[in-house]
Image 1 (tube, rainbow, N blue to C red):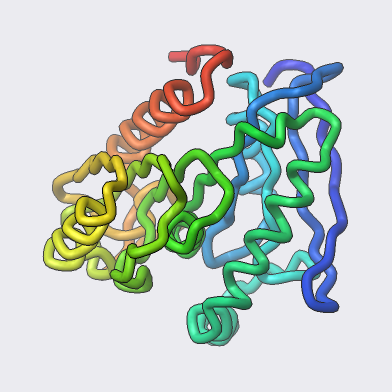
Image 2 (cartoon, rainbow, N blue to C red):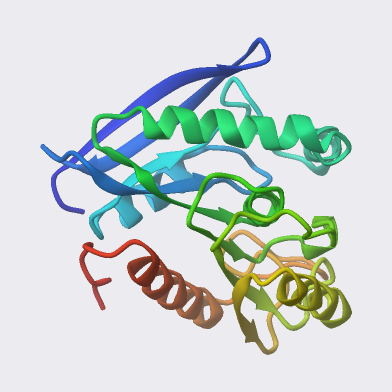
Amino acid sequence: MSDQVSRDVPYTHDGTRMIGHLCAPAASEGLPVVLLVHDAFGLGDEMIATAGRIADLGYAVFAADLWGDRTLPRTHAEIGPLMAGLAGDRPRWMARVEAARVAAAGQPEADASAIAVLGYCFGGSTALEYVRTGGEVRGAVSIHGGLDTVELDWSAPTPGASVLLCTGADDPMATLGTLARLRTAMSAAGVEWEVDLYGATKHAFTNPRAASDDAAYNPRSAARAWESSTGFLRALLPGTRPAPR
């Protein structure tokens, strides 16, 4: 990791305190921005490390705190209500993303006109929903997002947005039927999209701790998703450095 600025950034939404995190090359300003949305386990050390890795490519990375108050759930019993609480109230869900985008845009390192959103797992669903509902970004990357959580009314997406989906062929939260319906909806809306579909790959394939019937770490697919995502971001937000090999 090169010399970086790394700091927590408090912000609020509807009375809830959020604690985002900013990573960017040191002594920089006006950089394109990646709004990073965490997986179901919240904005912890692993996601902050991912923010630093992306920042090494020349971005200002703002890691959102979607759950609020830097909550770090550890069990399905804790995660379920958090996900259901947002998925069941989509205006509130998207308002939390918008609060993070506004906070990101206000950072001195950031170019507020050049923002893309990238998310993992529930964060991947969040990135797609944000573009589907017209969020102010140039595009979205969803890495093993729960596609079954994304609605199919794409009648008012972000104008000119591009979408990249990196998903496993054996992900029960993103079945081939669900993927086909989503592709059809995005095409009908004129959204430019790409899909990387990885064989023998389940949900949460970038997470080394994932090991269940539905979710499993797949280092080969994780590496491919990183390569595709960074290439997509470079095309969407020019002027940054190539990903190291």
